[in-house]
Length: 113
Length: 113
Image (cartoon, rainbow over all chains, first blue to last red; front, top):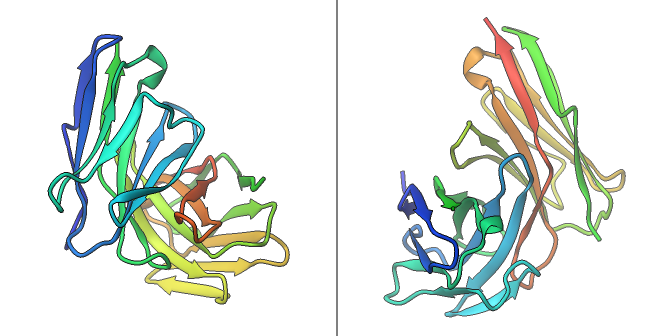
């Protein structure tokens, strides 16, 4: 069964460092998202991406965050200068069409120290 | 602003019992509602997707209903098993701009053998 693949599964980084979280969405899906879940809290929307551009972003997704789909298969989330409060599980999500199921990857646990 | 609430926050039942998980939302203007399962430290697994025009969806021992007018959805699990132990999340798609999902905080289910 097709699945969303995320790497790495766990990343530890020092505060102020840049991190890139990588995702391979399901082939032929058109809509891509990043969500995060801080330990013990709700899953929160960060950004949606369609047709090679951001279609919506949340208040969390400030100038420190960026997304790219560099080669038609990978989808990345970059955090330029990590803060302690960026520690969370980050989920990549893809959807075939707007009204179909959202499929989540297994997540990258980011720990900022 | 759409708010999603899931009650109870935690539920413990003996194996074999039928159970109902609840999800309520404040704004009935939704496009669809999706139920997920999350195992500890893992990603989200899609269980059922209900479009706004539908009343219910079934998959195996799971049945999800949607009543937009009252702002409620329920997930019914028949003949519960220890393997059903997980956190169950409901999420609403509220727009066609980017298709983001708004999540409830989840119900942590424990099924005792």
